[in-house]
Image (cartoon, rainbow, N blue to C red; front, side):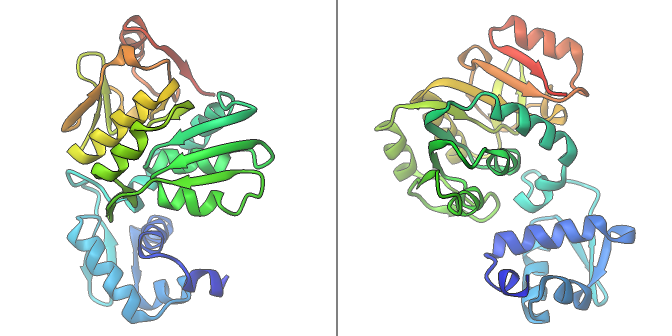
Length: 263
C-alpha cells in the first residue's frame, strides 16, 4: 500500500486527501495524520493542501486542514468524487447494463464517469476511448480491455484532456456508446458544464457515438452550469438516482430520452 501511495499522481493524492478529510471527525486532519495515512512526506502534503486551498476545497488551519462546506464555481475532482457517492455506485451499476458485449465505448471525464469505469466488467472485450486519466489508469490494469487515451492539455481540476487536439481526434471516431458526464441538466438548457473546452470535448464525444448515455446524480438535475453543450433530445438515455425531482424527470422524459431511476 505504501508503494502504491508513493506512485500516486497529484490529482489522485489530492482526491485521497479530500476523502480522508470527509471521513475524519470534524472534517479536519493534521498534516502528520495525512502524511502517515497516504505514506507521503509532510512537504508533499503541505503542497497538496496549498493546491486544494486555492481551489476552494479546504482551508488551512494550524498544523493541518479543514474541509469547506461551501462549493466553488468549479470543484476539484477530489471534492466532486465524494458528492452523493453511494448514489454514484448505484447509477454506475445501471450504466454497466448499457455496455455492449464487445465494441467501442467513449468515456468522458469526471467523478461519476470514473465510478462507471471502476464498475465495468473486466472480462468483456471492450475498447474504451477516454480523456479521463484516472479512469484510464484504472482500466489499463484489465487485460481484456483495450484503453485509448485522447490527446490534449490536461486540466488539473478534472484530470481530463481537453483542447483542440482532443476534439480533432474525436471527430475521426465512430463509437458504439458514449458515457457523458454533466455538471447540470434542465429541460430548457439541456446538458451543461462549467468550462468551454470541456463543453466542446463533451459535444464531440456525443457526436461520435451511435448511442448516448448520460449518468447524472439527482443533485445536478434541475441545475444549470455555465456552458450548454447539447439539448435533451440529443441523448438516448439518462440514468439518475431516486432523489431526483419527479416533475423535472417527467419533463426530461417528455423532451425525448428514456429516463431511468437506478435502484
